[in-house]
Image (tube, rainbow, N blue to C red):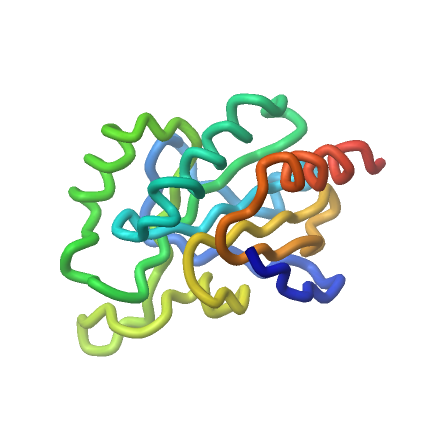
Length: 164
């Protein structure tokens, strides 16, 4: 796990093409007052499947929803044709993911979805799994890349949740 330096800046908006597990599109500004756990993953990423997604599900289950909002970000930067929305829907169902999942939007270059997705690029993500913590005021507070220890992540979330 690598901790990436996060400037104390407002989290950029999410660029989401479609949502799963929520009736309404989520917006970071409307979630102010809650700690946001943004978990970026790809369904063909072994670290995501074995560690990241289950960790995000545990966070979603353990922390009160009015205090902590988990958002999954399916951000595809490789194997684009294999990771389409129907496959993601099956993945979310089979892995019993219950938190909202947004599909990161790509630049449209003549109908092709190549390159880095927009949210991934805005947040300076180096790959998946990535875990980003946003405080109640909407500021970036942590950016973790790779496998992050459950206790360490839980402690960081609890500290942020305890802040006024």
